[in-house]
Length: 558
Image 1 (cartoon, rainbow, N blue to C red):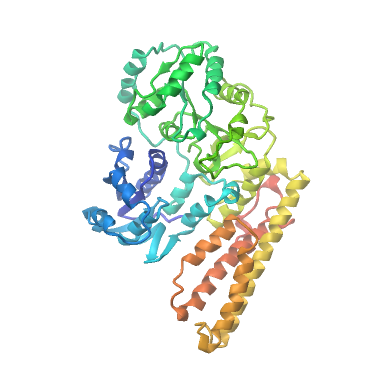
Image 2 (image 1 turned 90 degrees about the horizontal axis):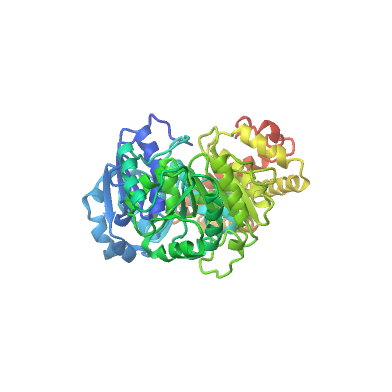
């Protein structure tokens, strides 16, 4: 449940040792922490990732380590002298009221274990050889990104998950990376010196990505740029790193229109002011999209290959994403050499989406094979949603919509009845969707029954004096029965719930047999409540039945 604001933290440590885009996605959490607490925030991060945020009031202290050093500790799964330098820093020898680990690696879990904190959230080593994820939001994060099945069940944005890991209520945000008027004006000389006419709308194109398999072909950007330049006053600016200079040259060589080429000519610190001057950024899934969203500039995102909008689309209202949804997406293979997914990102769809965003043109008709169009807005519970544009809702989004509704209830979020009714009115008339609801209801009902069986076995063992599950008390037979039940629970295949079960079981210390029965009873009771609650929400005459009036979750929560 969200943290009550009276439970305030004075000293907070955030561990975020990822790329620049991930750091920018962490800023809404820092903003909410500052709003809810009169606190000192220390950020442990990679030195090369803080150029943008060095002077922000959201961070009081940086512990910034060189990327070259981080590479030496990144793969560590056990304490090592290599970590001693970092852990000996004065900031990491202090005590904190709250430690939030947003990094996925094992080394960050070792750091999270070593730092003293009254409350911790995220991945942490609980013992020398046992890693856990603390907090339901932290568990959900790792569940949602584990595999393709789980990723397609998730419709909760990474930023909202981060805020949940901080124990904070969610709230809509317009921008969180401030750009002053003088800074914005300071970007003008660079644009003018490269041909900016100040004539009308300025549209930025990010041609590259950190991995080229995530980059739309330059030919697509060329066709898009030529189309947009036919509009009076439209100017194009090309953005990218020095390593992407060749993409800019290809664009200018193939294109018959002028463009302001700033690829390789800007520092990361220049991007907020430059993007603030733009009316729209059209980009692959890159850190630049998150900077644009952070300064309040709208984004048209191009998502395919390993990119998936539900996790990493720009945070904020009014952004649009074109998501390729082939049977093999979202891809888990960053070495895939097939171009099918890129080919599905039809240039006409991108043009239509850009026209809608820039000039108020009619919504694109989503009849492009294997391609869906989504637009972002905030729900009444303060979280972000990317909703389908048009009447057609893909099979994949249907699955994500159902599971988002279920997990909102489990994670303590209220239901947005308007959104639920809007989507439900389109889906409930469809027999395949109703069949999907019934299949999931049966699945969760069966899961709940198995947890109930496990609780019954534990209850009988406790009554018989076998609560400790010691072999001499007959506990080995009890454990054998429980292992069978557990095997049935995890056998149906991948899902967020199945993975959540695994993380929940990692949470406890099972080395003490006297405590094992009690701990397992607590875990099974919690998981039974979740599975049973999901099943009841999906009953034909239950609170999830009438989408047009919303899924009335609050009245039926256990």
